[in-house]
Image (cartoon, rainbow, N blue to C red):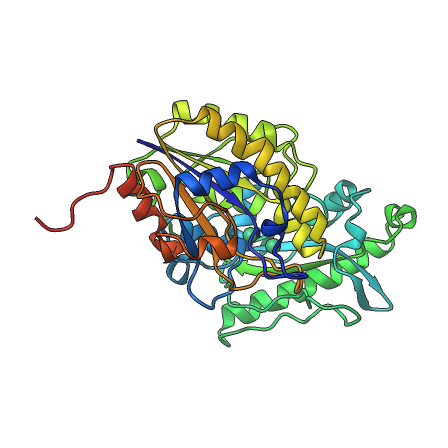
Length: 399
Ligand code: ZN
Ligand code: ZN
């Protein structure tokens, strides 16, 4: 039996005026899904741990993030097609805005104007014995790779993650020469980007200048067994988000790009659903990721999140229920992103599984209803075992 895993990023929530966005949204198809399936709630990484999207997805695919995760940078790099070598240090970066030496916008107004040209300028930065690769990703984001002898990812970020302070100074975490050298290079990189970008003509035309690069999430190439080797299923990923594509890429999934998939609330998710349905002909395991729910959550926009959920219900879950047969289908989220706090939280997410399952009494796909379901409260790292079992691919433990 084949499997389809649908993850709506950051879909879980807490209550706003007595309801979560999932509860407020009209979702007849998700409710049908819950009614026919088995439901529960899930701690994607571990109870009480606030998951990043990368660690959450690793866990959902059965890779223990506490063991394999080295940082976000390498996955961002893999997601934009930058090949990491052993010893490289990868970081994710933002174009940001400085005023009088202080960060006043960490995303340079989310304005992409001229960032390609600025990327070319930043790429010219040179260090004595360390090569850099710098590539622009979606929006204001970019990836930096440091390549050379004696580098380490045990360094702190230059992104202060807060406003009205100068860029943070990278420091060595373990006090070793490799990390001290890497921190020094990062601090020099910050200074050089400031110098090059501040004077650039592009920035005279932008509403908010993109006059510094802030880096975070330093990591080295993670050692990951391939998904196919591990589970005996060939797998495809449909996502518009570089980080998630990077995670999937790193475990050998085929990443299928969909035109019109943006990773925002305006994404052509109907096309993504069609692509997923088609991919099931060729792949044993298809993973469909939808990001808009998380975007709306970070913006603290309840209505936008509710509308996104309703669109997913109509344009994704509806067609999948209609067309996909004889498949284990999982509908869930990678973490909660409550509107009230505009960031990821450890609140468990709802999950429903369709297929050859022991259907329970739950008939609504919401956080609180699913908590009454037959799966009870599970951990993300166990999801693949459950999928393998329900798809009749699990091996017997013992005799
Ligand atoms: Zn996420
Ligand atoms: Zn998020």
